[in-house]
Length: 119
Image (cartoon, rainbow, N blue to C red; front, side):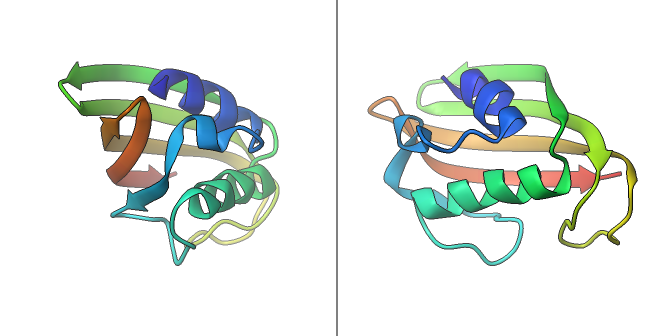
């Protein structure tokens, strides 16, 4: 489920089924800027990525599960064509390396802690 979201929705800009992956009271402990809480915040991140890198791919390097915790390390690859927080608006290659720890309950992501590096 976690891999499906990051390789599918996040990579393709799909937001119509975010509620299938995230709980309504989802908490992002390390959001990339000020975002609304819950599912609207997840939608805002996907839309932000779509504006910054409309054509992108996701490479999942590691995916580990232990009880209700899932750790994922992935890279988004693409061409920056729009604004992205903390990065000058320019055209050119862009990669975002992410490590996230997620807590899952009842088949949905309820919490996220993470770090990202943009290059």
